[in-house]
Length: 109
Length: 244
Figure 1 (cartoon, each protein chain N blue to C red):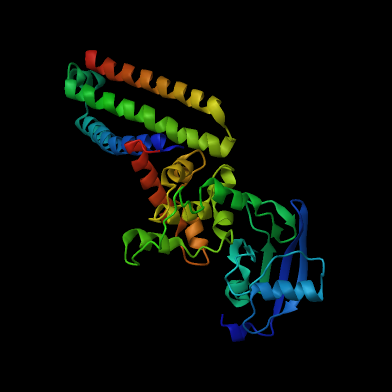
Figure 2: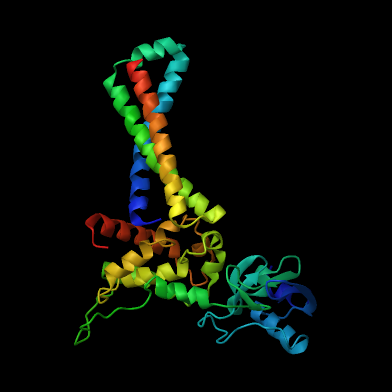
């Protein structure tokens, strides 16, 4: 891992610490209040702050996760070279696409 | 158990014989007062197995050549008392992990020292070395950081203890990175950007998982893990400034 990836992973870790905390509190609140999917979507619909939070969450996760996975694949499977970078870049794009699709979905629902 | 209590008791020693493929050979000895693990190996080599291969030089913890795996943990054997490490009168001696075995307890240290070079663990005076002695105050923060890691004897204990070395053969390892950190803190050195680029490359300081295995095992009580943390900060700062 070079310095660029190291910095990216550390910065996204800080973002994820806040985002995951808010996400868990939101889940607990929804469960405690007995909110249905419909009630939740009513609250997220058109909510720009909620949408911004989850978009940042998704972007941070799409950067952070593949960097960690890259280390695991290098150390445990011995992957090297451009093949691992290309694979993890594709995985990052997949996470980003799926995550942003979900974030947009609850915003426009 | 105190040293006196061990004296005269039976000691079973299992020693690795062979190379990558091989097996253990057992010996029965009687313990002696203040006996070191290196004393035991020497007694076996001189009295039982003249072709037993092992390596030592100074016998006083300075040269770093006698490290072996003792009861599963890498140690400098010349300064390790049998009474401190024998378990139920048993000693199991193997070559250091993470390095190719030459024969019996001797490993090939070539890769270990090549990685020191790769980490730019060599003083770089620059094209125009200082004409006179450079004044470096002992209480200077950089000098103190360098002093904290400067007593490394190159024994390979941290390299053998490190799991990341076992997983990632590109990883430079704690000793090479510790040496690089002492030079990063050497105010006379003129090769800092190349060094920071070298330690931040694939297999460099950012590969460290901070398991502290090298620090835990270091016979000189150095802390290569903290040196590596320093390299992470320094190389990250250099990358953000665009100086590497």
